[in-house]
Structure formats: structure tokens, C-alpha cells
Length: 148
Image (cartoon, rainbow, N blue to C red; front, side, top):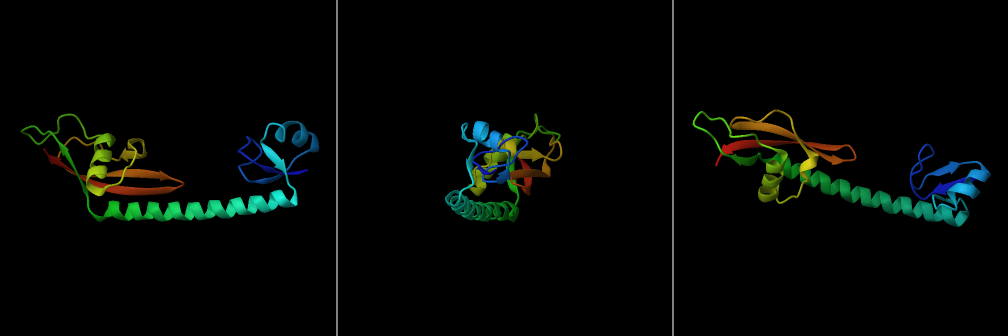
């Protein structure tokens, strides 16, 4: 029996996927638990419409992500840190500080958990951080540590 999955099912498939399963599995487990619907002609048309809408949303999201990536690569972000007389930073620059600097200087809100710093930052200078936007979209952001 062919069914259309309404949500992700382990070891079977993902949302809006058309799969073949045994009749008993579909009628006794997938359909009653609202994991799937029968693949009737009307349900197949609805699936196609959902896939078109999802593709449009993904294209819009990708365009927005590319715009953010382009803005982030324009100029390095300046991160202020307290510095001793030898040029060493008190503590270290964290992803929280980078996220805050991006929000203030570029106007984009990026979650600190999506930012990973490539090198340990203990002195003034230029460094790089990786930003993961999800779905395989990554960007490298340059930031400059300056004295406050």
C-alpha cells in the first residue's frame, strides 16, 4: 500500500514522502497514529502543492541567508575587550560577544550557538569565526579584537 507520510518516521522516511508499506502496518499503525495518509489522487495533489510551497519558502530563506552572508563578509566586525599593559586580553572573546557585536554593527541577530571561533582569542588582532545557518549554509566571519 502506498502512503504519504505526514511527519518523519524512523527507518521509513521523511515528511511528505511517498512510501510503500504493508497493508497491516499502514492501517493498524501509521494511519491511526496520524503518521501517514493513504495515497489517494486528492492526497497526492495536496502533497504536490505542499512540496511547491515548501520549495518557495526554502528559496526565500536561502536568498535571505545569502544576503546576510554578503553583509557579514563586507567588513570585519569589531569586538571590544579589556586589555592589560602587555596587549593580552583579560579572559577570552566568546561567541556571545561576537553575536552581540554582529547585532550592534550589522543589524542581524545570530544565535551564539551557531557561532564557533576557529582560534583561541587571547590577544588583540584579527580572527575568524564560522557561522552555521543550517541546511549546509556556512559563512566565515572576520572579527577584529580592539581595546575598550
